[in-house]
Image 1 (cartoon, rainbow over the protein chains, first blue to last red):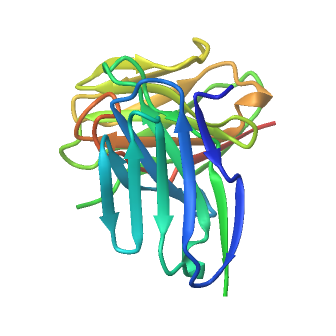
Image 2: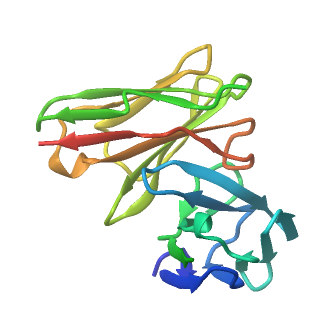
Length: 110
Length: 114
């Protein structure tokens, strides 16, 4: 079993829909990252969080440390949000690099 | 501020050769991490350098090595290339090491091993 599990693996939605991507992890962490990767490979960091909730524009990320679970929400989705969204965790202590989920492939249709 | 740059962007090599990839971090960032991305395994951590010292290492064979210079630029070397080394190699820079800081990714180097 992977240490970081994401669901769903693939998601197709219509423009304007509210999107939720989930990430569950099985190890203790000090931080969780949400990343966005567009076709062509470029990766952009969306959020880094260790507790609570963060919001940036139409994107919201939440984390529940006790339940070892995080969610990424996209409100009023748009075709330009189509990308792969990747969850990654830092196990803390500075001993390891990031451990990544397999990613969620999101397609927003106009 | 200029972003993270990686050179070359594309590379084709044959089995048994070696390759060196370069990464220039954002000015002021002392942490550089390297990652391998393949369709089968996804993103995997290779190693991280901070202030010219390797701080963390992923589960890769010794054929994968790296170094960091005093200006924080980093190089990654793969010796005796295998077909399975074909991948997108990404580097990311950060103000803090160990994944504690926001990661800024470069565009990647796509390596094809024939």
